[in-house]
Image 1 (cartoon, rainbow, N blue to C red):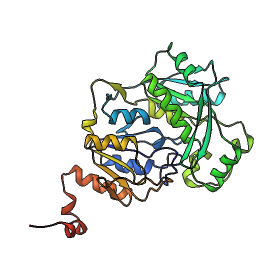
Image 2: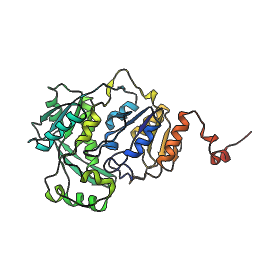
Image 3: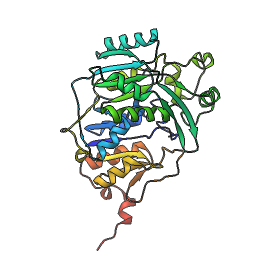
Length: 328
């Protein structure tokens, strides 16, 4: 059973719209999967990443293209990670690299960007987004380096009132949307695993914010450098390949019920069942089409997958389904 688990970024998902808070749901789904494919923001929780061993950590736009059958994915023994950051390199960034080298065991090289990568977060009616400047210069600079996966650690500019409102009130994570845009632009060009995490803000009111917050945001409160999650994910992130796991090997897509986009369209075209989770609400008004399935929560989703894995038809284990069947 090979499962794809997504929570699209920047749409205010109740579960997975914050700081790695979809990880428990993903771990549950992964427990009934042989391979569990997901994108970084599902399990990225700043200095925490608790993804299980059978996780395939795939940047969102690469995942879209994989589902569109443009290439296969192949899991490496390990990746050499290149970390790029704006000048000057901070001491906490160096410490984060050293900690990853001596706990995860990964190989990491750090590079200062010659041109600043500037990211500006914005909140719109449809969710989080933003603008990215300097990404093309980043791509040109890293061409001279030998690496397998790219980690990007740069600050995201966000209006102070927006950031404080998020921490105090909640709502859509203002940083996730522009992170997804930057990762997509870079990944589509270099065709290697990519993940981004923001370094600490310079605003002291946010930098030294010390308060009890929504549990789904707590990972942000206890983190210093925000990038350990990237090293954990990219260490063995699958590479794009001509051979390996293909879209034909995918058995199911798990998604919030209130969203529909590129990965869903690709799965419908490939004949991959789509299972929507109604409890995981979003700020979108796009519900899945009728040919998709749905359950109320991720606990039911795990049961649905387990029955599928065992070849047990859902009609045989539910009175509701039995009542709806037509008998000849």
